[in-house]
Length: 399
Image 1: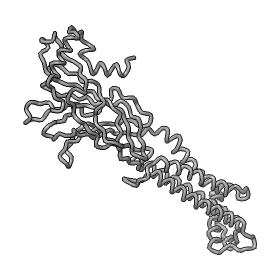
Image 2: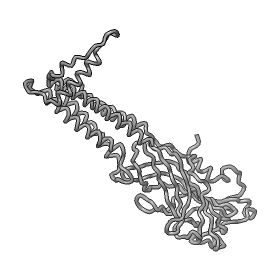
Image 3: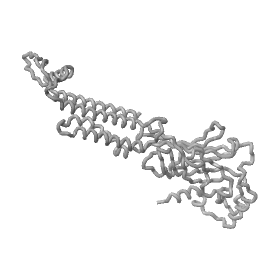
Image 4: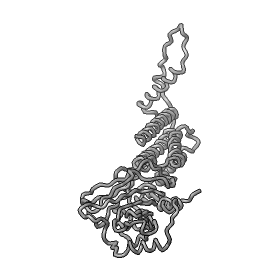
């Protein structure tokens, strides 16, 4: 299998890798001596200064090294391919035994000063590159490979189903737009040598230039990233959903088992642990939005707190003395629910018309029956709350 560096060499030096050369070392040495004699690398190419020099470029992505949501640090490795015409470096191949191209160290020639204007730490220029391939027409080809660390403004509203837009921003230092005209030959990032990232998937990309408020032309490379969600669904979303689903089942446990308070407290603490994990991952900023998942977890924590309170109330009801009368309003509700159960359980012959016996309206219910009604009410309410909350979250993150 051809290595990455082999591919780069073949791309950078096609004339040397694919054609048989006939010139000698002395021919190329004489050529470079003639080209560099009197050459000033401090002056930009272009004989006619009334027209800007055209700087063609493209960007190829090799890998995404790091993307920290907390700090906004976005690190990647890529290569800028730049070419321009330098008339001072043109020659007649026939004068040098058909020498059509030569490789000159980048320290000896003029280079565009591309400055990263959104760095994570120090402002750096584009200087780490291979030697420049110069053709007989004066065409200079420069391949600058570098690891870039930039600041990326993150939007964690739909975490972990989020998408991010991260940009590399450069401009040519020391020159006006009338001096150098930067043109991208490819409208998108070249991904031919890209190594896939395990967390982020590249949905789209864009390369373009624009004039900023200071009348400088910015060189921009945009990457549209989408998080790979399989890991987060398995290790975060599904366990959280099942834990929250268990919350309501505490009211189906027998009151005399003595496990109700312990069960509800354990579930609540589990949700608090997940909330802590999410807070460690997500940034502390509130712009542009706080994570929807964070709101859901806080809602589950508040819900769990009310469940613990409801469990204690239910146990208090269970422990009421039989001699203590049930309040009239609670008694009526319990009698109404008792009549509904009797109505559902009644089976009538088709040829008779039965009448309901409402003699039990004056009967009294026990505190045990009140507690059972309270438990069933809480169980149904919690299940409705769980399905409404979960469905709302799925709708929000998919819109």
